[in-house]
Length: 299
Length: 320
Image (cartoon, rainbow over all chains, first blue to last red; front, side, top):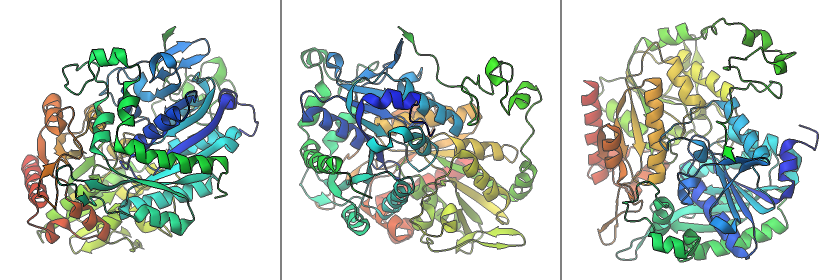
């Protein structure tokens, strides 16, 4: 791996920034943050080209969140063609093991070496093309997938950075701390920390409840000398939007976008997302992230 | 353009570039195999030798009456919280000996949730002693073995499997009525290992945990598929975080909307039992952070009542 010319490095040559979204704990919102990050980078300029790679092999959520459930991957002479979330415009490319499963209920029961092989293929065989950003969504923990990612991307290490997601609970913060130790051990720059699910606004009376307490993320960032990128409260609108997908076969589902709407708006998810309150909060997060990205922290 | 071939074969890390995979019929016979150090192993048709630790695990587990797995494909849906409540509820009866084993090696939450995060494991002539929350509730977790809670456990599969095997054979569990096993999210090394290690001793069943959103249900479907593939009995499904009562106006709202029918529909669809739904109560998370038993602290909460009903149902299903 010491040689700088590997199939992975050749493939990722045309990718400017690679951002890995991490969190020690599961279910804190890595995939939703990855999706939002990709959407925000996508809409930051009219020409930005963004890729999103889901390396959560045993629990891929990205296809659902981008409304791409049920799509398949095709092979071309130049590698696997990613699935484009924005249709014909082809600026938001997505790849996930979810696209390779025959049925959505199929389990991927793989041990480490097989996961490692799949990740290597994702990095070396996907025809991303020119990308400004590649966002990588990871599974919980600090194990095979994470070590494999870092190992295979060693030749492009200078373009790697990461974002840590946590919730305000002590159990999540503890795992976020482990995750931070991991980034230090592998010398991966951290752009900053995002606190997700900090508070819930009652849709009825507007009272804010700290369902999972609040403020812990900011506190941890201060203590560890990390940049605090911002906090995102629980946004039911966003939860429903990312969860509804554009349900393909169960078209009786009322949340499904109407066909007329789909035809009129090629990238309906982005339009809907732009109207959520999270989208507005995420703009600030993106601004802070852009600053970090321009001058990566030494951490 | 053609459909991409189904991904990778079983390729060991030290394999040559074009390794056909250890499970392939060409294993040890293809051109790429020449010179590979595993070639003779692959080429021979001898079945792989059984794991030498299996008899020891069987011996140790013979004094454990019931072994229950807590599973969920998705992370953060409340596996560890539920495991802890289940352990506490079993141990509420002084006559019942209960053990909790945390096989989430990279993100052990059980010690914090049970309020024993600063404890350490001691070893004696009869093995590692579990950490006791109370006289009849012993716990084992990798969390007790780390020099500091900040340390990351950056282990690949084989090392995690080794530790799980040790948890089963080297821990002095004693006579147990129940051993509740908390697992990490996903369907990977830890899950396969625990199933393999306990194959001879037998797993009494698995409780699956979900939240109402489709992203969680998708992963639970995969977990059900996994259970069926490896032949684990599913005791039932628990839906967590299924509604939130605002402390201000007492109106119940759905934070995580069941866009596709939630746990109820999934249970019907897959032919498994929905053991119950637990509403989201901010005090559950707080109790977990402070390491106190939610059931004891807030017995009147609708969530406590739901938990206790579910636990009773689990006992019924098990025939206890």
